Image (cartoon, rainbow, N blue to C red):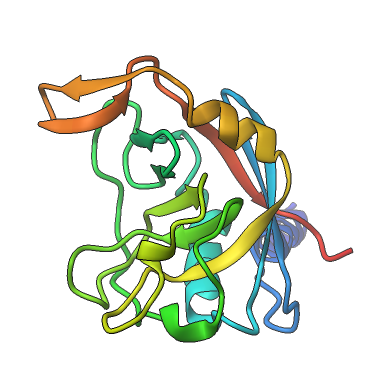
Length: 193
C-alpha cells in the first residue's frame, strides 16, 4: 500500500510539473484565452521579447490569469487586463521586468503588449491588446510599451470587447471600466505544434 501511495504521488507530481512546463526552445509559443466574449489565440515572439514572454508564460502556466477581468477598455485604443479579479482585488505580482520595447515590434492592431507605469521598467503582469495602430506607444525618444506577440485567432473578439459600454468606476476611481465585466475565464499555454 505504501509503495502504491509513493508511486501515485510521484506520478501526480510528474504530471503536474509536465503540465506546467515552459519549453525554452519554443520561440513562438501560443496561448489560448477563453473569455466571456469568446476565444482568442495569441502567438508570442520569444526572439524579440524573451524576458517579457517568459514572464507572461509564468503567469499563464501558474493559472494567475484565470478568472481575471479586462478592467480598462478604450475604443479605438486598447483592451487591458490581467491584474484584477472580478471583485477588483489586485492579483499577486511576481516583480517588474526589464522593458524590451526597442525590439522592433510595433503597437499595431492585433498585437499584445505589456502595461506599465510611467517609469520604463515597471511592467509586471498586466497586458493589453492594441485595437488601433498606437504609434504613440512605440519607443522613440522615450521608452515605449513592449509588444511581445500578436493575435492569430479571434481578433473579432477583441474588436467586440473594444466596443462595450464603459463608465467611471466610483470604488476604484477609474474611467473606462466596462459596465458589464469582461472575464478572462482561462489562459492556457498550447502544446507546440
